[in-house]
Image (cartoon, rainbow over all chains, first blue to last red; front, side, top):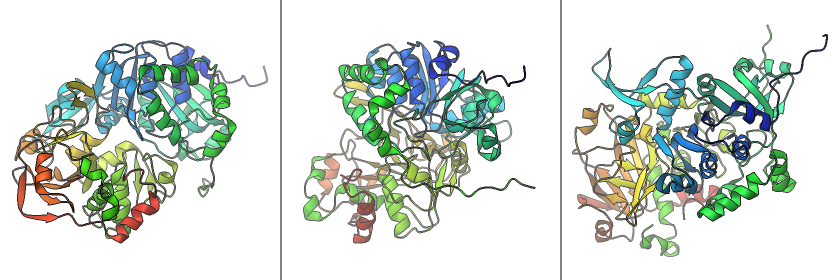
Length: 310
Length: 262
């Protein structure tokens, strides 16, 4: 064989979820906070009727609410589950308060303790210490936060147990076919999350040649050898923003808030925007080019090139 | 919101949301490191930077550090205009590390409930005799534990300013003076003010909140009637200063439709 074998990692979203996100998985999503939320992956998880997932992330904006409403999750480990610009998340409330559509266990973290849980796993240690959550009811209720006496000083501290998701789903601006990826903008817990997880699915706005990624290794926040699947999915983070590609679709979040106040409204939303659509291409078509165009970058702001020469 | 907040905006020339933003902005001293948050605090940081605190530095939980506030209205801290020309786009642990080091002077927090010792609840609400699950901590617990000062903003309602929160998402002074140290929380940390739609509460050395100022047009009786415990009143109670034209100009330039300051 003389020709290079095609990358086995490059696949469709359907294939990536089918192969790497079985029911019962612990899945990290929303690692970059309100930016680059992997909505396309979440919607495919719903279409493939995954069950008993443990959702992990600091905040998730409305993606966790959608997965909970669709019945995919039995547990959520997060710092905040809601709709960032509109308020509460109604599916999350229905699940916790009434067990609709199924019972949901919540393990409440703060943002920092979630970041430390992933950082501990990324460092390969069983826990990391912090002063945060001392005196709070988070500390009393979350068994992964344990008070202890410092062995090197006369202080109380909280041990944050390492959290090792089965899979991290990370939306990126650009990746090569092996999963080496550039991320810029809001990083949140992405860098630790990728190392904490047993494997990573990279969802990229663009697939580029390896030399593009290699030209700026400081921006390579995902090393390809940690990546199990690479999915090319333009617009895959909509309605959340991707710096340099598209803005946040604020109206989408407020419409979702209004529509999902009642269970029937959520079911209509789920059918219209997820279940009846075959894939993300169909979602983009349904959104319409005018709406996507309205979110497109109006004023480019390129960074100055960095000289890696010697 | 209490009913009083919906009327009289035109007569006064500003909304109580705008008054709260101005009051929050004045809590920021120049050169301070401030954990900003969203909604009213985001506007307050902008007002502070443009008026008296021109060298304050803003930190955001997503890892962002900004010295020049965004000139566009933000719906979330990760909106693209908040990243453009940021001082640094780092990781969450970077900014949380600064917080835990004790370098952050001030953090702003919202809350569903606050009690007489400044403890906050954003996890479980109790309305109409039913438990309501709220979104949770986000970074609020971290800020409440670790910032040198925290300032809380919320609508002044009897059910929201309560004797004792049902769930401590974010600790204030617990059950009073000495409690934070007994829990192991850092020295020189804790709530310094609660800015509501009716007035500003501050904390005595015993860790209990008292009424420090009432907003223009609001009576002390109205504040007391809308507070769920017997609120102490400062001997030298003042009136919260109205927002200045300069402060209003800054917030209206970025939020002309009053998305956050209704």
